[in-house]
Image 1 (spheres, rainbow, N blue to C red):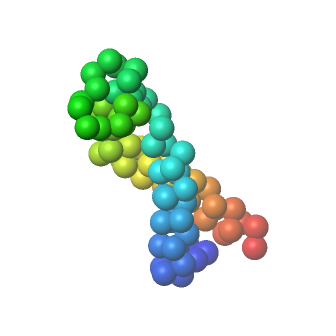
Image 2 (image 1 turned 90 degrees about the vertical axis):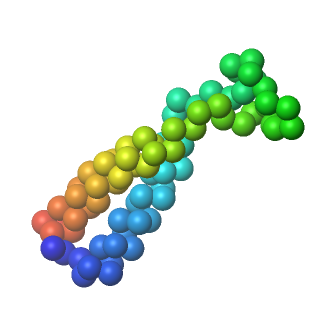
Length: 77
């Protein structure tokens, strides 16, 4: 492994949070789009954010990106 464990963890979590912000908007429908606005909430609030599914997808994508970076670091020098 080209990185120490603390460095690998730091790189992975940096990638994870970056990917999370890219994945969060996928498939989100607002209350205004569905026509089901709950009184007292913002019309732009998501109806069903599906955060667990997005966390799983984020982890899978982050693992692939981290593996690519680790492979590049191992073979590039």
